[in-house]
Image (cartoon, rainbow, N blue to C red):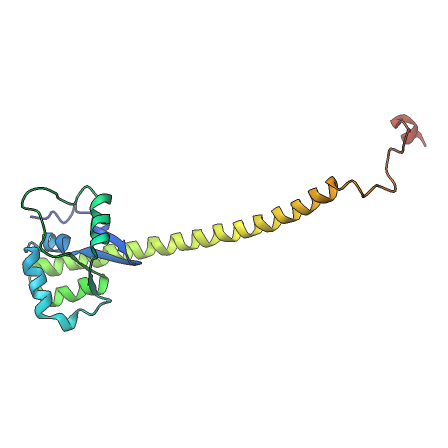
Length: 179
């Protein structure tokens, strides 16, 4: 049984191929159905799930997820015959049309809210990254200007025409002020 109050849906959302998705395995646990049954329902209604609603992971993507998260079960009897499917926000919404139980509707609402929170977090971070990029661009411009100034200072061919100290003169502050 899934505890809806304590469940953190944000941890179930992964970014794969630049899209936020939930694994079929995690959705089946939430909906309290076997993964095999969930995928059977999806296959029976395949026209409802275009490629931007769901897709199957590659071996590399699946192994990468397994290495990143300790929540992926390993051991005897846990092997999958097929690579897992992942569902985008739209795919999860479409599942609620297929799985019509009270539990499916309840879980679906909470998952949609989690996707909204994740979208807000990404949007907020995108603005921060854009501001950081602007600051970096300004710093690069300033660095190049400082580099030009330092090169001019280091260039010994340029000699000052006027200044406070002339060759062989000693600066006398008292005399300078009194004059």
